[in-house]
Image (tube, rainbow, N blue to C red):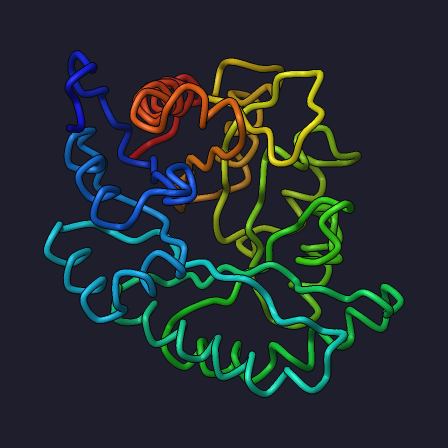
Length: 280
């Protein structure tokens, strides 16, 4: 039963959203219990959890819980498999319909596998494959935002820096999901953030405790080395107005337990947002 080992619910900053991948193996039903227990009112949702619950039932459950949805996220299109592109575009258009029903303005996705393609070939393919989805999304008030991935995860993406994400977003009329864990020490980060402006649709936050030898290996904010107050303040100074999403995955989170890790994470990120001067 949720909350049995907990004390009081943390104070939740109004700019905080809790990502459902922070409870990766839990079903949507249990996630909703946790959100209510913690007092979280804004969430980012991974589409597979909605699919597992039944898409329309899931929409009704999220609406019934009175939650604001920061983004709906899903895997990207495998760019190197031309035979699958049409079906994958149809999949993303179905996810877009769910995003609209949930009332979110952001559909997040990775850039997709590009194994066998050069970087430039993959970039061209990304633009072509996402064009009809981005066009349909824009007509419904939703931005399609791409998220950088690690080089070792070639099966899910080929873009591995915030700068390249922002460049491609500008080129193809997309948004960007900024994964702080992957870009916090990227060369020219502040310049990239300022240049990207409102192309940065959402910011995801977690920490890193070295040495890190597994993937993913994210930690509760404040447990590691990432200067999160400085990063958050840089985003605020650049005019970022959307939620900061707490997304924690990996053995540290699994070992501590989702309930305890999310409780600590919500409290810690709320304090970081306050310290950085985030206004509601």
